[in-house]
View 1 (cartoon, rainbow, N blue to C red):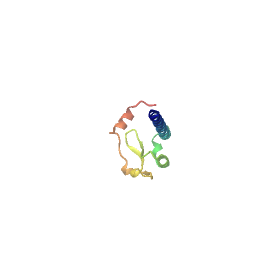
View 2: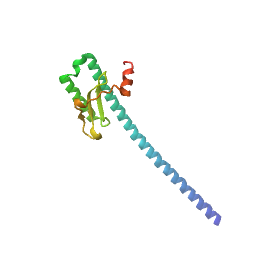
View 3: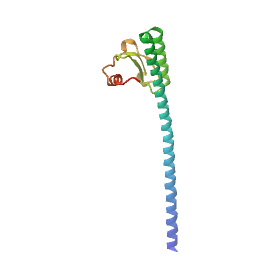
View 4: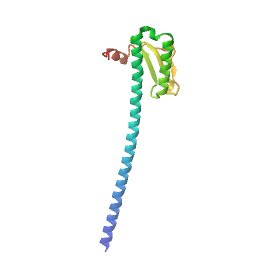
Amino acid sequence: MFLFGLAISFASSFTNYIVRVNQAQANVNEVITSKLAQSEGMLKKEIGDLKNTLSLTARFISEKNNQGANLLSGEVMKQYQKEMIIFAEMLQSITQFRYIDENGQEIIRVERPNKGDTVELVSEDRLQNKAHLYYFKETMALDEG
């Protein structure tokens, strides 16, 4: 009788252990699924933001190629500045957004000081030449298209 009771106790404990392991595994799976869904959403947003950034940049380049030097003067320049500010305000991931000419000179730069919520247009006297930086050199070495 004692052995029978011991066997029942062991079977009950083992069953309880299996139930807990399965429950823990289900909880882990639920957390993983939730994190994956969250990561997927964030990745889709980042890809969408990147696509929008590239579209705006491509439009600037296309318009400059079609209109030449006159594009970056007067009202057109002001319109580009406004568009870049609005665009950066919409995309929290953008901390700086620059329009750099073929010589490496910043023409327009908007930024978020201290990674805050406000986006500011950088004054002309603070614009910099980026011709010496790797990203400018690598970009200029790319084939068109």
